[in-house]
Image (cartoon, rainbow, N blue to C red; front, side, top):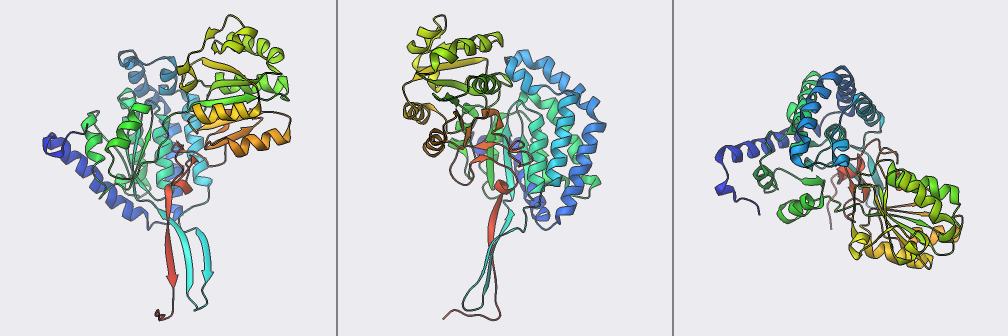
Length: 427
């Protein structure tokens, strides 16, 4: 439960209120600045990331040294780690965001009414965003870049596991904001790991317009329960790959391995494999061998274990689990419709893929699977803002309102109606 404001440490309450007040003031300034000013800052940020890579890695090393005391598994430590390659990728992402069209002021629709009124709907910033996330310091840069490019101020609250990494990144962000003559308060980092600070910020709908939690289900459920402003969220990434009867075995092997193994600790990694019964005896044994060679534990239903007997028996809970690890549940289905029913019952509405050479099966799957992203003959790992042309993402929403799927610049805007008249009055 949230600590009532009256029981909060007065210094912590003052800190949170000050963060929110300064963010709102910065947001009002950002909303009136030209896109060129925001792009100039993004280019400065990319250059600073490269120039200060050694300092960032040094700060990250302090977090990695403390990782065992937080009980982080191998996948979580991988998400936490910064190295030269990842910092270069962060810098490139910032440059890609700078190169994207400015969404602010974009005319969504325009018309002239019969009475002569000129009516427009245009994109405008949301305002102040509270972004809560866990042990992925690269997300600090993604969130700052996307929020500023879309004209929003952001309050960042990363996990305690990445505290030193995020503090170093925040210092770099603040310095480049000042150099670009943008309000330094446009990007603020909550400077405490006290969970009560989150509760207080969630009680400021007068200053914070949207909260985006990105992390484990416990974090997201807490935010949904306590927030007094809208929440953009996804609870889990229980993603599926379905191998249809007509699938190409070589394509299926490559895609399934990529979807499960390439980076198992992220939300768009595959967690369940469904295989049509007519192709399963041919495709499952070599695919299981390849997955095991990559370190994957397989948990199969009775039909799958008839084909590969030494799989671990799957339990009912396995079909609803986001492992974020080298574990894959495997089930044999009688038909395309049974696969669709399984996904819609057990999936998290995040990312699901079909592997097939049948156009009608692909169309049926795309129409019937109720997920934010549905792929045909491609890995679930492609449900990513960068891969889908958004430059970067602040998260992947499984909501159906206000945004769904990867959330980039346009998903961080709202709209305003602007009407031009010439002394018009309504009769």
